[in-house]
Image (cartoon, rainbow, N blue to C red; front, side):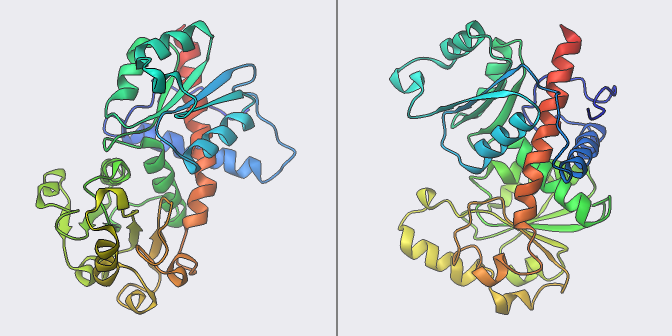
Length: 316
């Protein structure tokens, strides 16, 4: 069993990054690294969630996040129930509160929620005594994505990202990933630049203490990390022409890689619109850590699940 009985993590829920301390973030990194190392030996098994039932309540569709949480929970010994938007009673008019009461009656042990409504995970956590983990609530936050992204950088930079220059490129306006990463990166001492077209990266984001840039070359030439975000086609008007225009002005390709540092790290939380945010020769380059992000998504979520459930048990 991995050591999670420290005094740093006392919360049963993970709702956001904004309220986390640096010590809590680093505790997740420590446990995630321990899980990662031990998973290399496939004979290792874990019992932190043995005998528990974890509910993936994904009112908003997802593949990567849902599967990563499912794999993480099962590796810790839990049984997992997946409730998708199409099969949820919420589509029949049931309120989130009634769903919460039913989950309580069914004796679920942990609920992982993804919903289109900002604040839904926080509300659910007030109705349930069991742990609630936010897997994305509208354009508000996506805390486990930021934790896995920063854990990936923590490993790439040998234990610290303090002073590193990180450019987040793409649809910042609609992105919960961007918001969570801004909080996490700044807490860990990184310098953050937001880049993209004016309509997707408004100047108002400077209130977060970041630099806002609408010129691609200026935004990426000194960056240690370029994190691309999905251009959310459903948010754009005149989709085809808008995507073409984005690619022309901000898409990463082999030629534009020459504008960046030779050892720049390329990231993307997925899903990638290849040929829009980046071409295949960028996504699949030696600079890319995109698949490492996927791997780290499992162990980071294992750490979060173990910590939250342990805190819940200790408070009962």
